[in-house]
Each structure stands twice: as structure tokens, then as C-alpha cells.
Image 1 (spheres, helix red, strand yellow):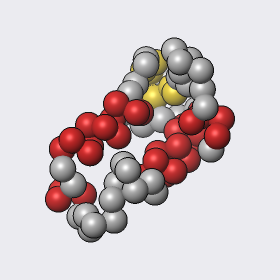
Image 2 (tube, one colour; image 1 turned 180 degrees about the horizontal axis):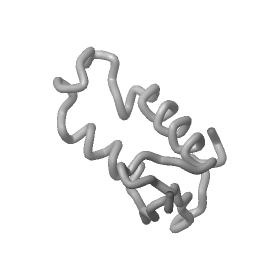
Image 3 (cartoon, rainbow, N blue to C red; image 1 turned 135 degrees about the vertical axis):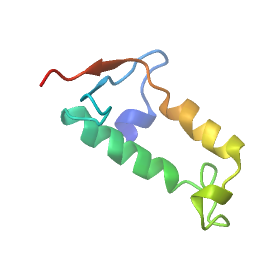
Length: 77
């Protein structure tokens, strides 16, 4: 997923969400793939943690800051 990993500083991919904050537009697929590639990287999610609840909060915060939501725009149903 080099297109996401290599975005210039300040450039974001906006993902529309529905009333339950679930991604609903074509960018949602991009977001899911990006998250999937991120959690496969040992520096974000070491395989020594078999349970998400055992993952240190610092690792979770690091992942969140990488994903950081630039803006949420609710999808109008």
C-alpha cells in the first residue's frame, strides 16, 4: 500500500462514515487495507502479543496517531 504510506506531509484521505461511524465510501476499502498492512508490521504490532488487550497502550497510541482521523464527515442516508 505504498500510495498511503508515501503520502506527502499534510495530505489526508478523508473517509465518510455513517451514523454509526462505520466507513461507507470507496476510501473505506483503502482505510481497511492500510490498517491491515500496519498491523502486520512488527514495529506497530509485535507478534509477541497474542491478545489485543495485552498490547501496551503505547503501541495502540502509536497506531492511532498513524491512522489519525483528519476529518469525519457523516454519510447522509
